Structure formats: C-alpha cells, structure tokens
Length: 216
Image 1 (cartoon, rainbow, N blue to C red):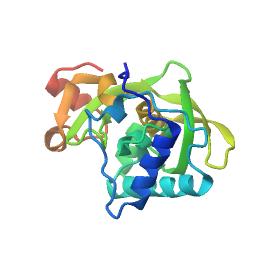
Image 2 (image 1 turned 90 degrees about the vertical axis):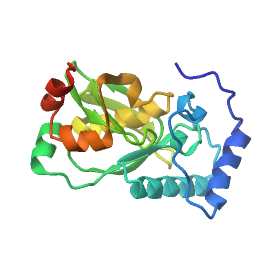
Image 3 (image 1 turned 30 degrees about the horizontal axis):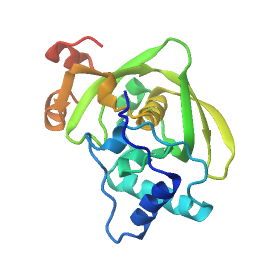
Image 4 (image 1 turned 45 degrees about the vertical axis):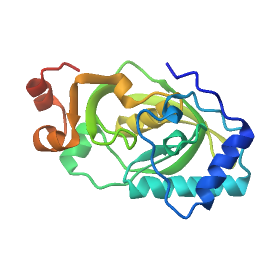
C-alpha cells in the first residue's frame, strides 16, 4: 500500500519541478526507498503552465533516453505527479521481439493515465526498473490492456496496447500509484543484473524458471 507521506501542495509540486528545470545538473533518478516512489501521485490539474509542462516533459524524455529506458514516471524524479513518458525504439534481436511481442512504441506523454486489463491472457518476462538499479525479476502481467489518459494539450485518449507495449504501459502507470515492479514480481526469480546477463538473458524465462526453481 502507498505510504501515508504528507501530500505536497500544488505550489510545492510546482516549486519542485521548477528547481529541476532551473538546475545546471541533470536530475537524479530516485531509487527504491524514496518516499515519492511509494505515494499515490497527485492528479495533474494544471499545477504547471503549458510552457513549464512542456519543459518538464522534455527533461523527463532526456533523462529516459540517457538512462537508458523505455519509460519514466514523474515520481522517479521525486515529483509525485501523475505524469509519465513512454518510448521504445531500441533495436532488439528478432527472436526476442517475436517471443515478447515487442514492437516499437513511438514517444508519447501521459497525464493521469488509468489502465484496465482486457481478457484473461497473461505473459511473464523479466523486467528491470531505473529506480531499482542492478536487479531484474519476472513479472506476470495482462497481455493486453486499455489505457485512458490525457495528452499535454488536454485531449483525452483511449487506446489498446498488447505485448511488450502493454507491459511498459502497466509498469509506468503502476509507478503513479506507488507500486514498483518488485511488488508484483516472482521473488525467487530475483537476480542481480550481472547474473541475469550471465545466466538468464534469453527471449523467454524457461531456463531461468528451471534453474532458479520458480513457476510464473
């Protein structure tokens, strides 16, 4: 459950964002244990004006690219607002793309996203997180979801996502409710990234399941 940490006022949230935008140093991606990662993030209701929001989203996108990652939620920069950016254009081997149903995801920003599973199909794969550095674990998630969100211009959207795109959508939206992927992970699959790369980095999870003794 998200912690009962005191909620920041709209003015405090704006001030926190402006400090990031005015800093000469790149933002730090906060790590597990930071209170912003365990709060139910505040709904975006115009705490930032259009220019400030555009600058913040561009900063989030740059941080995501530099990390590198395929998504970044505002709480990962210590800002508990319901904002995230998503983009997956990283090249992957064909066998990985086929096994994981991984297709390129063009960049988009979401305000106040909410997803719901569609159907009963699920899939289980290893995940990592920029806010849980050095670890990987298997998470079983719905294979298809429907996402409602508002874009930075104020237009509402509803779209279906499946495969790896659906996984990214769920992972980033979960951040906005104070949930880390580890909360949903198969704990016996937990691996340091070095060991994951040495032993379990394959398109699926069959070898890891057998070798580490877990069922997902």
